[in-house]
Length: 103
Image 1 (tube, one colour):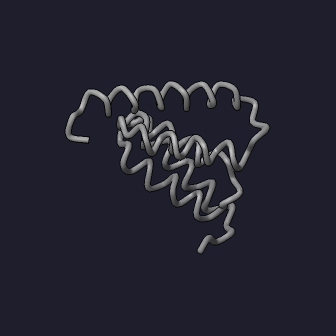
Image 2: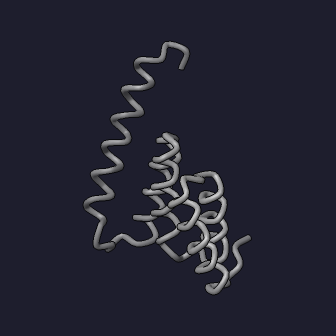
Image 3: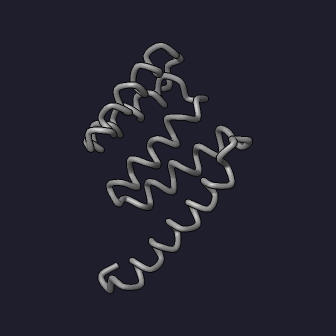
């Protein structure tokens, strides 16, 4: 289960952000997931996970992460922006699934 450890949560965010800047999205995702594990009530790792998944073009996981961000922090300053982003990603997913007959 989750372990409350704000120090390690922040360290994981810092390292994950470094990886994001390097374009190492899988490594960043691992760190952000670790941060969410260490401090489950912290919203930032969820938003960063959304960004990393989006860069990887894993839109369903990006949507899931952004929704979790808004669930944890419903009054976020960027809530309207994130809500719009979720809608845009949901449209992309719908378009992709309608184009791909195998799905």
